[in-house]
Amino acid sequence: MNYEFGKFGGQFVPPPVIEALNEVERAFNEAIEDPIFDVEYRYYLKNFVGRPSPIYYCENLTKKYGGAKIYLKREDLNHTGAHKINNTIGQILLAKRMGKTKVIAETGAGQHGVATATAAAMFGMECEIFQGAIDMERQKLNVFRMEMLGAKVTGVEQGTKTLADAVDYAIGKWVERIEDTFYLLGSAVGPHPYPTMVKYFQKVIGEEAREQILKEEGILPDTIIACVGGGSNAIGLFTEFINDKGVKIVGVEAAGKGLDTKEHAATMTLGKEGVIHGMNTKVVLDDDGNISPVYSISAGLDYPGVGPEHAFLESIDRVQYTSATDKEAVAAFLELSREEGIIPAIESSHALAYAVKLAPTLAKNKIILVNLSGRGDKDVEAIEEYLDM
Image (cartoon, rainbow, N blue to C red; front, side):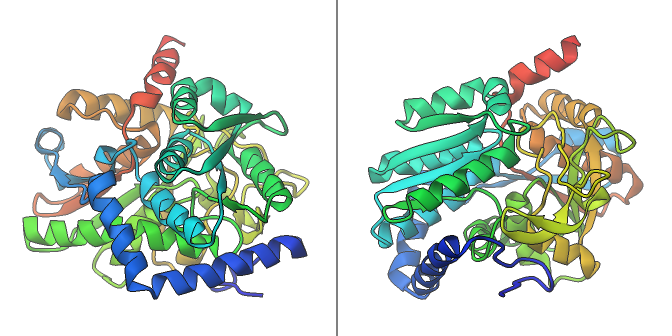
């Protein structure tokens, strides 16, 4: 079995799915060796997505805390409002190359669903998105956006009715439709080769950020930070800095209502090695050793597993993983909005929460770079409800 990341990764799926995965892997390996594929991918990143996304110096926030300079990698400025579009463009080009006519996908916060529906509309593909019923309720705006783009949005009523259940359901439906359908997985999770593919299509974040910060400051950042659910935005930023030993790398998970409660999604902090969604990684387990329901105010972070490369990077002590509570994330959400005029996604706000705690502990000549993985339009209603509680 192929474990891409030390003992993590693999393909823990039924034989029919392995056959489909092998087909995808062959097509992916051929595509990334084909200069024409790369030219087409880069064309759409530039002219459709709007890349490169800039980095932005948070002058007001930096002055307020009086320590390290805080920069943001502005993935919120991408078409559709998040980093997810980088991956959906890449995978849908691959699906097109394979002769597929339909795509299915899972979504939590809805950003991957919107990005998939967007790419499917552009390439004329039939599209169905699976989303947990609870997530559909708290992300109504994105549900409507997906439908406007021509996608069918199917609510998942099983389990906790959130992201993990949407992934389960989507994989099951893919098995039934393998002949003409491509499963467009949204995060750096799942069976091989999906974590590797998603990383490939998201590493543009780190490639750009590294070049931009060197141009702006002349040196690399001291610390880079990203939120981690499944972990695609984080792995996209981290990959280009892994070999820079002087750069501290931090992933921030959802601590929900507190690590001392059962209402959290802190997989790296409190999870154990286990198998979920076809991969060996770290998983939040209950007292009986079963996958535990998890919770976060963020629909994009309430996932009981994590991408296998994150589990690997922690195991070799290259990346530090920590967490932020709902309260801390909401405070960071409001603070960036008021101090810089930027409304961040609640997912990204977890990374911001750590950044503003870290900044005053560092000297003024130090640099922090935060991946602002998405914009917060989709979260305004949920934040309003939270503040009214």
